[in-house]
Length: 146
Image (tube, rainbow, N blue to C red):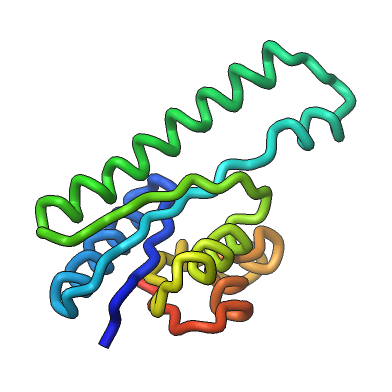
């Protein structure tokens, strides 16, 4: 049924649970997976705050890329252990939901498997929900792992 599953990660334990679920689903369907992580655009953030320091910006970006690499390596390793074909993508985008949707569209994915932090009430309203935004804007099926 599914041929290409997109699995976003933020490195959290909840994300790891969704990764394992997505990979199990991919193995069951003989599908491949793409892991994605969104790194904020620090250049714009620093310019907006008015404190442009190229050395600080470079260090922050390097640390973010290293973190992203470790998050995506977790997906690669889990997929390899399960015998599932996997590729990974690191996107620069201040809005993770947008990076997720664009990665799904450009990769020709037919399912997105992601986690939900399960915030309720005022916390959900104030903090927003990347998962909720993916559910709202995605044009393909989305599976939410709680």
